[in-house]
Length: 285
Ligand code: PAF
Image (cartoon, rainbow, N blue to C red):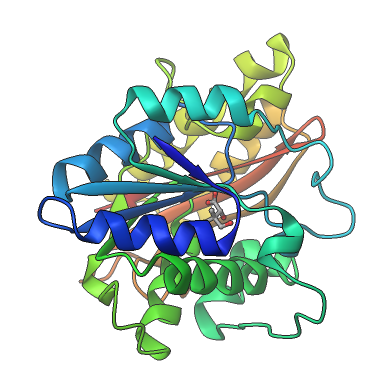
């Protein structure tokens, strides 16, 4: 596996990959601290393309001033070994200065889908995500890109950005969302789970349990507001400090729903346990 840390090396490495085998490239953008969820994306990418490029970049522009940018786990050597074992062809690991050279002035802001939910709790977060993912797409020019459905709103923002900015490659329908990978007790895998103490880690499993109970209630005909209130009460009782949001939303627009309609719906939750903010989402109906 080649490791590129500058755009020049990346460009040459991508050009070389294009000339090998069928030349189709899949990109898996990450912030590192890789877990089984990321490796699942890599395996899906390997099955679909000739070469897999993984990016590892802890993107400062998507962290708010009081968020965990400094504490975010960084373990490049460990991550590189994991990716090499998965048959990744190229690791793109730029520095902050390489990604955002002095004088960088551009910001990509996607209206609508980025405004509620995590967008409301984390102002500027999705601008940072859209800006860096647009750069990654332009730097690697992949045929397809893989993202976890765990960050469901992020996926919607990226799809909207790629459609609106006519990013020829990857085509919008080649932005592939991969179902969330879960621990044995149902907790969605996340690099931030490592912030949890052993006691908090046990309590955290209440989140997917409460979500499943709410989904069963909604699908069984219970009023959505009542099911969501019970969900919030359940996770607070289990030890969560607060709930940022617990929303039933239209899967495409992410507009809140007061009742199940004809189209696909999603239950999305963000809640804090100790100092850690966890998010999760599940299909409903
Ligand atoms: O999901 C992530 O890890 C990040 O938000 C992403 C897509 C790599 C952009 O920094």
